[in-house]
Each structure stands twice: as C-alpha cells, then as structure tokens.
Amino acid sequence: MNEDKRFAVLIDADNVSDKYIKYIFDELAKSGTITYKRIYGDWTRPDLGSWKKVLLEYSITPIQQYGYTTGKNATDSAMIIDAMDILYKDNVEGFCIVSSDSDFTRLVSRLREAGKYVVGMGEKKTPSPFIASCNQFKYLEILGQDEIQGKQKDMTDSITPLENVIKAIEVIAEDISDDDGWSPLSDIGNILSKRFSDFDVRNYGFSKLTPLVSSLKKFDVKSIKKNNIKLIYIKKRQNDNK
Figure (cartoon, rainbow, N blue to C red):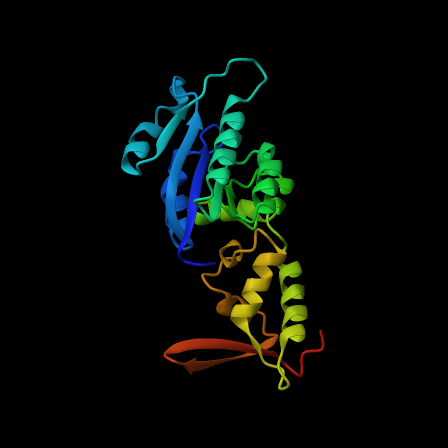
C-alpha cells in the first residue's frame, strides 16, 4: 500500500474494547496517514466510561448516538451515514472500519466499489462475511498479543488455516518464478494479502514472511542487495516431493 494513503478511521464502541486502541492506530500508521478519527456509541452508558481517557489521548471525536428504538442499532446507522459522507467528499483513499459486527459488510463492499482501500479490524468473533469483504482484515487479539496474554491460542478456529496458506505459497511461487525457479517473496506476500483478506504472518506466530517460509523446509531462500535494499527470493527444493 502507498504510505501516503489517507485513511478515515471509524470505530464501533459497542463492539470494540478501549484496550485495543493503541494497536489500532499503531497498525494503521504503517499504511498511511489518519485524517478522520471518529468513534460511535451512546456515551451516556456507564460501560463506555472507560473510553474517556483514550479519546482525549488519541484525539478521537466521539459521536453520540442514543438507542431510540429497542432492537435497532443507531451506532451502525450513524457510522454508515458518516462513511458515505466522507466517501462523497473524496478526500481519503482508504477507510478503516473497526468493529466485530457483520452489519458493516455491505458498507465495506460499497466503499470498495468506489475504489477505496478498506482495512477491517475486529475480534476473533467477527463473522466471516465482514472479514472477506475487506481488502485486509486485522485481528485485534493478534495486534495486541505481546501485552494481552493468552489470546493467540484461541485464534485457530478464526483465521485462514496455515495449510491453506502453505498450499497458496507453493502455487504462487510456481506461477511467478523466473526461468531458474526463483520467486520474489515480496510479490508472494502481496498476492497472499489479496487472496486471503485476513492474511497476517503474526496470525501464525511469526513477525515476518521470511521466517514463516523458512520454517516450512520446502524452499531455498536467498537474499540479493540492490540499491541498498535487501530482496528475498525463494525456490522450491528439488528433493521436496510434496
């Protein structure tokens, strides 16, 4: 992704804990500049009181939404309306929708139809249709796993199985390899992110893609330095018959 990409961050306070806010902004800062920071909820509710300090610290604009009707989610409606208003202003290239609620699936699809890059962030309970609708989806438990202990073990039923990722790496590497069988690992990573919206090497206990691929024992790995940039290439081992 372009590092100059401007993002609008819209947070559903009803479905996200304030303990994740640091990880949300740290992660998104890798992808671009955050120009809108809004969070939605009924701030008269006592259970949302813990957000007050966080909102001040991160300069997030709280949007008040009362639950006018039982069974109707006013927060969802407000987020959708604001997202469409921002879309029509056309002064951002991307959106980050922070929620574990599948009600935003159609919104994400609409934003992508308009050519916007959409990053979703939510907990492991997030329904798969919402995850699949995003360009990228980040699990909050994974983003905060260094400080929030005991979560990674619970992720195995939520993420794309590692076996599927391995199979995809093998196919992609073969498809894009040069005449000598070498494939640029950065290109493989980009394709994996497009193929699996929730692909993140941290989901499988690795900090980068190179250690993950090396651990498979299926590929030879080499690095080449060009213009002070280290490029990693992989090649399927000849003695690997799997």
